[in-house]
Image (cartoon, rainbow, N blue to C red):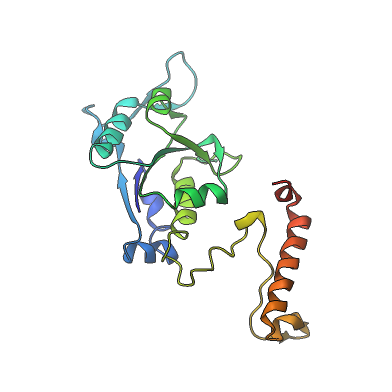
Amino acid sequence: MRIDIITIFPELLESPFNASIVKRAKESKHVKIVFHNPRDFTSNKFKQIDDYQYGGGPGMVLMIEPIAKCINSLKSKRNYNEVIFLTPDGKTFNQKMANKLSNYKNLILLCGHYKGVDQRIRDNFITQEISIGDFVLSGGELAAAVLCDSIVRLIPGVLGDESSALNDSFQDNILAPPIYTRPSDYEGLKVPEILLSGNTPKIESWREDKSIEITKKLRPDLFKD
Ligand code: ADE
């Protein structure tokens, strides 16, 4: 998979992509992540990429020209499955969307800033608008990092144990069961006996029961689906 990220602050994304699973996925060539700065696509001699909004009002708006040129330049090189704009008024991201996006070959992520981006970009270049929650970030970069992390770990071959992504919380709309490791008894705090029994079918059934119990308790809304 290839992910092209359009951002005026690539440095915000350097550390999330240079550690842990995403780093490994880049090294093993399961994913290529490339940054593009709209400042490199402006004809403005001062490299200005934002301006005041027509009609008045607070805040700067990312201009159409640098973003349009950047997206067109990428699209002239390959086909993209989606051109995604990260914005608080987009569709709220979830595991189902991550699963779908992880099957794609080429994605563009556009990170907004300031007050947002000229509406003509949203109307004519963007195929999907995604929010990571009902709160406002300073820009789309951290949202893009969240999206990439959740997508990249789902690409087949990225996680060592193929089944581990399938057992994540939210796969099948259910939360993951509790997990334990050594020691089995820490100052009287004991691991449930069943997990030490070696009886795999019974353990699986215990885990399923616990998942359902926890989901009903913590996220009853997930049961509606
Ligand atoms: N940009 C600013 N806030 C955001 C959010 N909540 N989700 C995605 N992009 C954003």
